[in-house]
Length: 365
Image 1 (cartoon, rainbow, N blue to C red):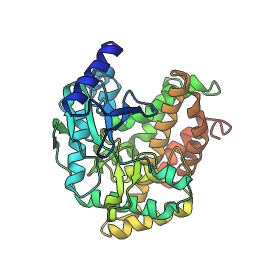
Image 2 (image 1 turned 30 degrees about the horizontal axis):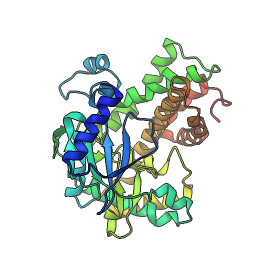
Image 3 (image 1 turned 45 degrees about the vertical axis):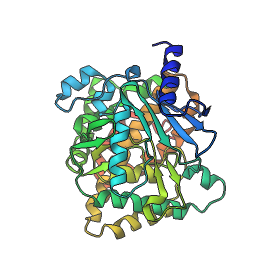
Image 4 (image 1 turned 135 degrees about the vertical axis):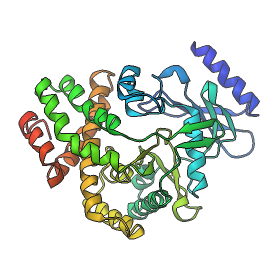
């Protein structure tokens, strides 16, 4: 579809939503194929236009596909990503709101064409509010309360229902977890010529991760936002309790281990979270969920955090080396620090030995 044809779809959609006369202000893009505009009507509150062309990415996974079929279909199927489908966003939003959490209302939706009008939560992203001088601790502890509420809701349904139709909530399984980890060995050598991984090294890599991957998949028992961090959470102080955390960018939600969103928040790729705040936030989480075996949970937390950090290093390497986005280089030292710290945990002994053999210390800085 041409750019002009896509724009005509947007115009027709906005006209049907009664927003033909609204001013439109594009928002900066991110690493995805999705784009947003702020809509400014002549009267009434501002809104957001979400625009995600359905054909812009490889297809999402069919729940019935085997690992081999997912590998053949492309990365979204391997990782069980939604391919940005608007109906996924709408279904996850409906589920979050049913639990008393804050996801945007959706006053207009055209799922087949990948368009939606959303409630505008404003610009008070946690990261920006903290940069402007707010005390970060209450924000992070409230984000923990929202996660605890989501996790206390228990095992989520296999199918979510939303205004765009039903959407399967798939499990973040062994194929998805290992596929994410493998981005590291696939892409780091293309960014840094100090490393090279032959077939034997890759086989050792997968063997080292296997117990952690199995544990992560076996522990998949809650809905995971999957991208829960200070750039995707919006402070809504006029609301109460966990609803003060406005959630966005959750269309890739899966059934996952409850530690996943915790380490995404507390071992963030884009901003530093102090060890003291991480410890306080974890204490709050376990206070809110006293039935959880903390020692076993934290072993999984370290293992899955390390896997996620390896995955993100691979993604950033790909964005830099393939996509020509050098700004992601600034995040690599932070991710190496997180990964190196987690590799000191006993549960990661096999993975740590692999890094000692195959990734020189000067690379991991």
